[in-house]
Amino acid sequence: MSSVVDSNRNSIFPEDAEILRREAYAGDQFLLRLKASECARHARPGSFVHLRCDPRLPMRRPLSIMRASPRDDWIELLYKAVGTGTRLLALKQPGDRLSLLGPIGRPFQAHPEHPRPLLIGGGVGIPPMIFLADTLRSDPQFRPFAVLGSEVPFPFRPRPSQYLVPGLPPQVIAAMPLLDDWGIPSRLTSFLDLPGCFRGYVTDLARIWLKSLEKSARAEVEIFACGPHPMLQAVATLAREFGLPCQVSLEEFMACAVGGCAGCVVRVWTEAGPAMQRVCVDGPVFDAYAVFG
Image (cartoon, rainbow, N blue to C red; front, side):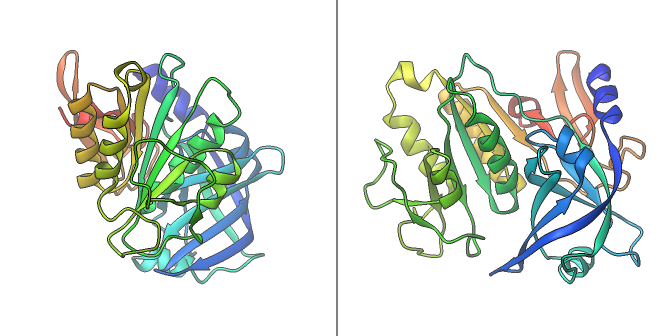
């Protein structure tokens, strides 16, 4: 693990990022596009930035990267304003500049022997799944399917998917337009009774889909997930139920985000037994069975 951590540290860059675009959505959700050339060049699905939300707040905030364009030197962040820092960040406008460190962390790793990635994102855990989908769509050997859930209105306008997903209830047709445009099937879940959405948890719909697969097709699935801790625990239980590999991206409060303060440690199971590892540089992506053993 030390070599991975050293590699993660060596790819962290400080940048004075300019806000290129800001969009506001229902539920105090905001999208920022930032000009950050080094971060865009080195970002991988699952990595995040440590952002100074306002000069009055010395403590930075970790935010997952949703998209990155090395060609155009930008990254996109989708976040929900829930505390002092993110509420100050929500006041920023195009042209303002933000200090960031990134990209940080160990990313998701897709494996060719599992060509059916199942991407599960909940709430502010949706952005890493979008980044992963963006990466996978350029590789024809992978056939991803995304299940995304939210208990506030989605930060996009759901639309009926153009892709049939066999095994799902026929009335569940709502999809994320961006994924549909990329050729990636997706379905949405919520308890808000939104048109076309599955009423239930992301794991409920994922279980229906997995049960519908033939045994040989199910063996090709690998699960990737990001979201609240209870959701990730449920995803790990789902993966164990079907005997599938599973990677999860953890969300933890952190101070330095570069492995120095050990303020974001979690207990994981290793071959040598239980150990404490740092979410910032040992993660944020972990094997689900190591975290939820």
